[in-house]
Image 1 (cartoon, rainbow over the protein chains, first blue to last red):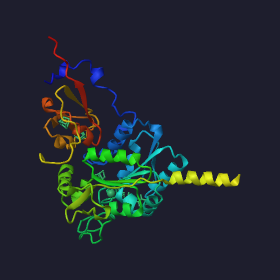
Image 2: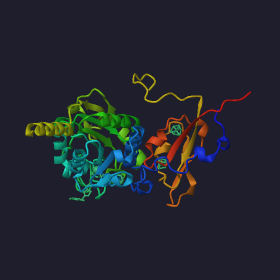
Image 3: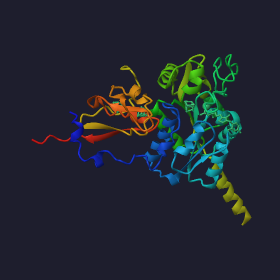
Image 4: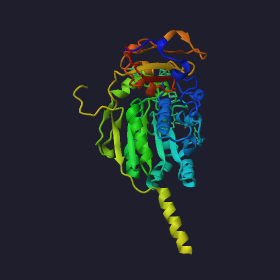
Length: 289
Length: 93
Ligand SMILES: Cc1ncc(C[n+]2csc(CCOP(=O)(O)OP(=O)(O)O)c2C)c(N)n1
Ligand code: SF4
Ligand code: SF4
Ligand code: SF4
Ligand SMILES: [Mg+2]
């Protein structure tokens, strides 16, 4: 039934010369290795924001340092390339100063959980209304493939040439235990489910955390002999188990056991930090009168 | 797959729609993710042409097989591929 290419009417109508996301993204700043799912995370967030009808003045993006840290440069919006590990404090300040802003943090596992781990647990505890997306590749991609707090036992990295002996953080369990009110984990290629979770994170009036599994073939893949981008996604897909009813402390994350449980683990909306501050301010002002 | 109890996340392909694929070849990295993730073998890397960054980009080889699932569009890390949908023109008698 499909008619041929030529029968498709005026080119201006069907082929917008201008890219549909031209107003949202700096398309020449996707500097990631070809096939790295960091780009997919950027486009997933952007399409969700577009679908919600938000314009660049309604949202802000904060990232830290690292390959994933470079994502802030890709957004044509208020975007901040914060110092290493400090994306969450920047985002907290933004949200407190302007509670109407939809604030996203998109950063790496090393940035959010090694140098920035302390900020993460306290943001969860406060339940501040920001959406944190962690691009978990289990390694420091940008700096040459060093051991990260998310590297599985036995993995080879440039700082663990005989295999890693430190147990990794389970980011889902950590976020849930620290008090995050929405927690999900998805492989980066599962774009439909990831987008559903991004919408839920935006709806959640509190701290939302989404872990995105996006293997780094350039560093992690090369040192562990796992092949190119496509082969590594196949490798990841074999380990992923989707279990939507799994409690967060049982959501296993282990490349060693070849089992990574994905799903939405916590969805427990409760009053966020900026709401509490607002109430506190009102009480203080009424007492002063 | 067929016995899955999960509700499908996408609407089934529609006979009253047809699809066209726009490739922004200048920003395509030729990473092959769309080629691998397309369930219907619609795409292929064009080994005869390359863009100004000397990268081979993706080309459409079998548009008639496309079901409009947009998996290629969602997976692409550089937003270089877009699926354009339109109603199948009604045959006038
Ligand atoms: C204060 C400080 N310490 C160390 C560094 C070096 N450094 C840059 S990126 C990075 C790790 C990034 O890892 P991750 O967040 O996992 O990002 P990826 O590249 O894997 O996406 C480190 C240690 C730095 N830039 N600043
Ligand atoms: S080094 Fe790794 S994480 Fe960084 S862009 Fe390349 S594949 Fe992605
Ligand atoms: S269109 Fe996108 S996914 Fe396909 S080869 Fe090009 S960059 Fe990769
Ligand atoms: S829309 Fe679906 S079937 Fe069509 S080319 Fe893209 S992935 Fe393949
Ligand atoms: Mg990393």
